[in-house]
Length: 299
Image (cartoon, rainbow, N blue to C red; front, side, top):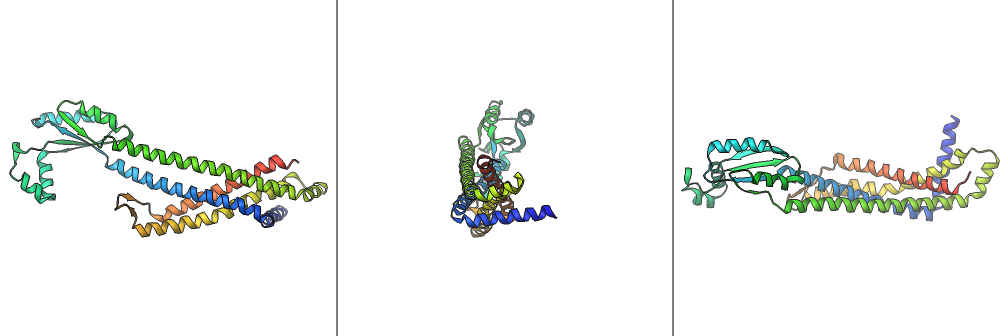
């Protein structure tokens, strides 16, 4: 019970210290708010980008156009050759007759153009649709497929795929860099707030030493003060994340840019982010106060 009473007193003192040094605390809290808002935006943006990238990867297909005069036996042999390649997830064969039938079904224009072509007169080409395991290696895989005998050409969106991968990577790198820099700034700001608190309570600390207070009893309130600063700073970002993202999701109907980019459902996504923001706030507040206590509170 004595331990709980002491802990309660330390928490109370830390809370009072935050209120007593409100102007300094406000600067730290504001920095935490800005940091966590950017962290939240970065996480949500990164998650949406990753979701979009995963969907793009699922649909990313190499189309291998076969020679017009290829035989059925050779088509079967080619499937075995494709299966032996690395980075192959699935292989689907589309005959030129099937392709023509689908095109005529989708468009009256194609129906009028291709209606007179049957059997060997069909001007289209048989194709193999190849999906890869790692989209980052799609270019190398496409080159290997193109080198197979009786493959006339391949298409997979060369250039566009590589550009998308580079864009995704750049977004993640920039987001991490901004968040990292802001976290460092916030730690230093909290540390300075705690430092000033320590200096303003020098006489009180000396009295505590004289009456025999232990080192841990003197240090704990300052550590709790940093945690409080972090927690107070996380309130606005958490509310903005939960209600802001939910509003945007409902406003756009779950998609951005005419269903090109699918948003992640708010529940439980926003609550996972909220928990992460609380964890970051506590860690940043603890690190800032620990740095100040270690450097300026020599006991």
